[in-house]
Image (cartoon, rainbow, N blue to C red; front, side, top):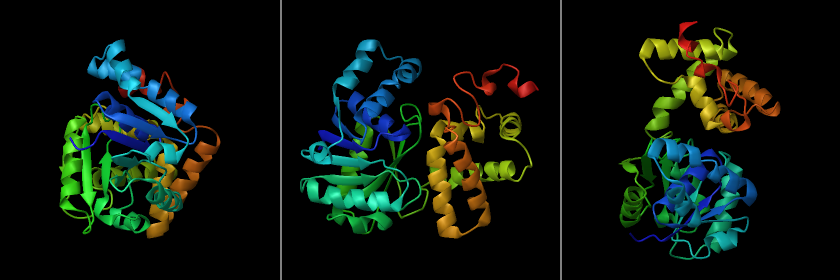
Length: 295
């Protein structure tokens, strides 16, 4: 494996998972975040999930933590990085500023990857100084068990770089999903985003409340989760960014209506699972009631 030192830029819901999953599998990981203390807490909070789902002992979980360091200094974070995965908010201006800074600070050897859910590599490659070493690597939430890594480059991406990233995906126990051409939303979100948008449209139009939508979906399909449970898990701030980008690119009024309703929830501190309230209340969500699907 060519990579040894990996930097994760941004430790939100997914960035924290990528950082820990990478460290757990033997890489030296630096997590770059403007608030390192919050980043540490977010990564440490993964312990219960890793122990419940993968059966990790305390010692095994702590071994992963021991390979992780945290910093708010980007120069320090990337000074010896072989690979940088950017997991910052879905905002083009934030990403542009970051990649321009990163290009100045990172060693020549460093490969850059974006984890954007809605933007394609050709939108961001113009901000980097090494287009041959730039691509996207996109993960699903709960990567320790939903372990796919969608890999998508541009026409300028060096095939050898693409293969290095495929090898890295294997090394951190992901199943690599190579895409042969650019596709907004990759495979996963090309299927998932229209689904959750349809669910939220039912909500904002007053057709049905979130719990009713989830119940209908779960009972009708046998799925263990509904769309609003998924949204709480991802985090409503991330969802708001995605929907706002859709409105800016497509100018469909329904996206603005959904974004405005989500913003009301976010402003009230109801950002989903991590904040304790979103469409459900945590740590004892309504869907945990054994009779949830019977009422």
